[in-house]
Length: 147
Figure 1 (cartoon, rainbow, N blue to C red):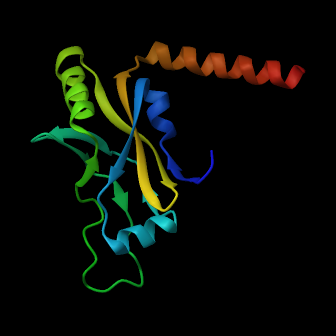
Figure 2 (cartoon, rainbow, N blue to C red):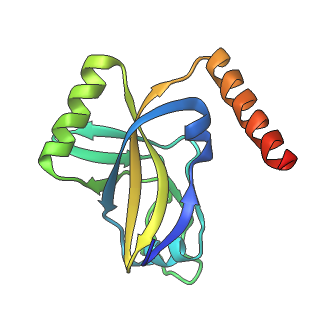
């Protein structure tokens, strides 16, 4: 894909959830956060997306404080607003309320010069689903080696 540079991926989300749909969302960041993101100092651990007052909010996502920043650096795990249009937010809210879905961030990337997130509408996997996924990956890997 032209103009896209992946910063980080949430591989654990694909292990723990079935991702039904994905959406591209912008994010509201401060200048020093963007500099830290360019260095790849981010973590998806324990992060999730919630819908509050008609806006999508990325909670508990870690962006390391910029080391050359001043005392204006913000908290590293603060809530960050995701930029989605109203129709997408309503669709996500309805799915979460109605069907037992959750919303997880799956990827963070630069699209041209803008920081974007790929968020997914996800349903949790059971342990036997996880084992089945691992078995399928293993079989695919062995078939690839045999070629």
